[in-house]
Amino acid sequence: MGESALTEFIVEFAPAAVTRGHIARYVRTTTDLAQAGDRMTPAILQRMLRRIRDNGHAVVIPVCERCGRERIIGRGPDDRRICKPCTDALRAEYCADCGRLRPVCIRRDRKPLCNNCRRRLPDAKKPCIRCGNARLVHTATADGPLCPECAPGKIEPCVHCGRTTRVRVRFTGGATCSPCFDIIRGTRRPCPRCQRVTLVASVADDGTLTCTPCAGRLSPFICASCGIEDIRDGKRCYPCSARDAVDALFRGGIPERREALEPLRVRLTNHPEPKSMVQWPKRSASAGVIRDMLTGRLDVAHEALDEHPITQAAELMRHALTDVGVLPPRDQAWAHFERWLDRFLTGHPTAIARVLGPYCRWSVVARTRLLIARNGISDGTFDRARSSCRIALVFLTHLEDHNLDLHTGSQTIVEDYLEQFPRHLDQLRTFIRWAADTGRATRMSPPPSRWIDPSTSYPIPVYRDWMHRFETDETIPLRTRICGLLCGTLGRPSSAVAKLTRSDITDTGDEMTVTIGTSPVRLRDPLPALIRRQLDAPRRWDTDSDWLFPSKLRAGAHTDYSMMVKDLQTLGCSIVSLRGAALLALAAIMPAGPLSDLTGISVGVANRWQTLAAAAYSGYPALRLE
Image 1: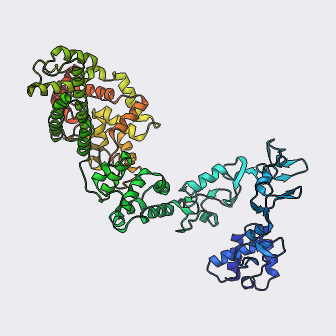
Image 2: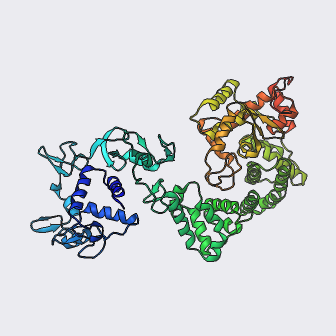
Image 3: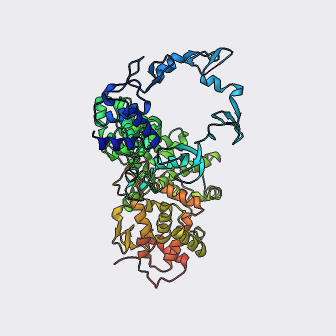
């Protein structure tokens, strides 16, 4: 190695002067330290020889005289130089208390006791003179016993936070408490000196925190697999542990299935959250779905996932497999609705099934397809279709409970039903109109349509308070603030906000526009800054996803609109009332045509909102761009 290189290595390996003195004294009395293989070599020299060998130099390591293995050896009970396992084996006897073959710790009445049984003895614990707790004695002083947590060298000021507390480790530049150690080994941040984002885990000569290269130390957080300093899971970094966990999951499959699911393995290996992927193959039900596919117990097909007993896990894997191209894309909303309709129409009495089947399978389905062709599919499209089917069933059951049917029922029974279920008005009107047109109802007529209830909107002061809170309150989640501001400004539903993509947003740096309807709308502060923060936020599944709000669980999908509604409800804000206040404010200053384009409502509904606003629309704000 050379004298200068060896000197630098010894200083780095043994930073304490006392330890370097022990090494120097032994080296002066040994002619050939590297090749002698002297069994009397001190433990610190044995560790240094191992480090030298790891650096690529040929050295001879002392071996145990009993087992012949290369281990740290010391003086055994029979004066031979042996390793610790051999020492324990020579000192082992059958414990008089537990009966297991263990090294003898003490003897009571000439009977051997192991360390575990010794710790359970009544006189093993004594009151600590510092904390007063009855614990095992670590150090006996002239004033009395000290427990392990109060013993000298255990309670010191932490070099990172300055608090005088129990020392967890010392290899980070000084005494380090447990909270600081957890932060150091689990947080990547910029080094104060070199600004490199890494583990700031050492103390420099001037007492400041730095990364290990700036401090001139050897990092204790090097991954044993890839050699990179990073947050570790045991002795390996999380990306390496996650890669091994995913490979172990796929290793158990048949070759044909492994080849078919290879794109998914690549996606999971490159997952942006490797820490969660370490335990995912063992704990997640979604991993169980993949394991069944790999072993052949489950087909790689949409139909097999439809029949899987764990619906949520199957749906998550369906999105992942479709996103990586293993499964072909499918209109999942229609498929779910058709499966739901098959389950919904089973088990009803013959008289109800004779009417409910044609209405649900023909009228509801046809009307849903017409709405999709006219307005596009939204998250509420199939919710309304299911609601129409359920309300038709409830009304038919109500008639049967009164010994009536569609032919014998009159308008009075319709009015009585609406008094009991006033929220069923719209769906019931559609059902009765269908029944009358098909000749199934002769004495009933659809109830009159109701106009929009102005009570569904916030008063102006409350509306302004909510908008001001969304603009300024940093404690509200970013997604909730953006949703509240867009819904409260444009009057759009949360389902439209959830489907925004990067292509819908045009950002020039000076201004930002968003295209929700047919025309772009200029956004006012602070919405552009909030949307930029959302676009820069880390993505869990799809790092290149086009969605403004990508789903955290469903690969290739956007966040469900109901999650945004729940976020607002948690704050105490009603999105219906917030949109109502925005629609009233816009209807007072805009014509029906631009109002319909901006908010997505029909021209007829826009006219109703203008009537409620009770204001002329002589002014036209510069929201729409030419």
